[in-house]
Length: 174
Image (cartoon, rainbow, N blue to C red; front, top):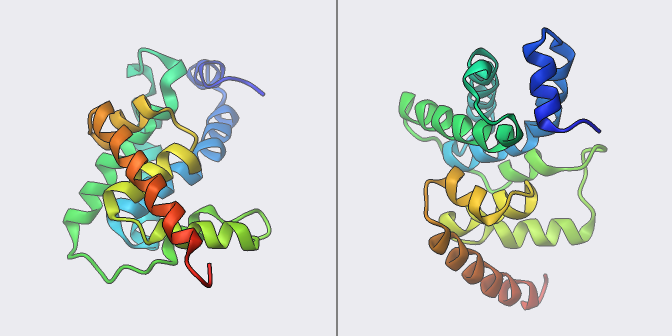
C-alpha cells in the first residue's frame, strides 16, 4: 500500500486515480468529522465533498505530503463549520454516526453496536476525540490539532471518555 506522501506526489504528477485512493482511504474519517460537527448525515456528506474538492484544489500548497490526513481533517472541520452556519441545526439522530462507520456489508456486529451506542452517549467533546482517535486512528497530537484543542485537553477528554465507557458498558442491557 502506498503512503500518503507517495499518493500526493502521484496526484501532483497528474494521476487522478491516486486522489481517488486518498478519497477512499479518508472518506470515513472525513465524514465522521463532518457528522460530529454538522449533526446531519446529508449535510455532512456535502461538507465532506467540499473538503475533498478544496484539498484537491490546494494540494500543491501542502508542504508535508506525509501529513495529508491531518491536513484534510482540518479542511473537513472548516467545511463542516461552514455548512453548519448555512442553515439552522436540524434534529440530530444518534444513528447518524453508525451510518458513517458501518462495515462493508452495511451492518455492525453486536460488540460494535454496543460500543457505538456507548460512544454516542458520551458528551459531544469526548465523543469527537474518541471518534478521531479510535475510529479514524489518529494520534492524540493529530486529534488535538484537528479538533482545535491542546494535547492536554484531548488526553484528559480521552481519559474521561474511557472511564465513562467502562461504566456505560457495564450497565445492564449493554
